[in-house]
Image (cartoon, rainbow, N blue to C red; front, side, top):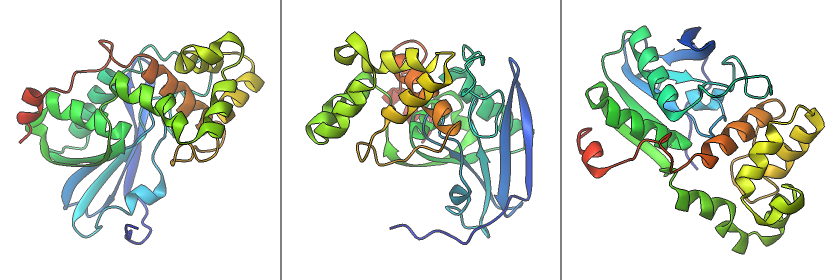
Length: 249
């Protein structure tokens, strides 16, 4: 169990206009003159939590945390089916990070995060290697199609009952097809009961170790995760190449 630093409040925060009608919530905590570091949260759509601030030594780091487009305190929220998520892509999220760095007047920063956050951090590092001082990641994921297939089908061998409930939540003939695509369609429904049921069925029991936040945070997390996972392997996601990562060393 990792021991966290004591609870801390941000010394600065704001909403950054990143275009296409989106505003990204950000906050900074710790030492204003410390080493800059940015937390890239998971999900997609998980959002930041107060405990994430506690991962940084407040005496040494100028910690930056932000909610990616469509989740947390960023607006508009993906839990609203009226929200246009065409402009919520890996490229847009990486550009938002760079815009935030410029807004805060940071020359180079340490990248840290887990799960989906590792994919986003690595794509950022490939595109802006001269803006990265170090990278410290956990629960590594590169969002390859093979990883998504393992997460939503392969895991059934370990948690058969939970996976059956997850599959049944897709409904109808979709139960034996592309489950991620089925959930993506359900989360686009204008019926709040349909969205709520789909969000509840998405992560049953112990199948995944990271609990989802209550509604509407759960809705945004499932909507964005399904959308990103459905697009994995397409041009939406930058390829994480050895040559690209060499540039960050």
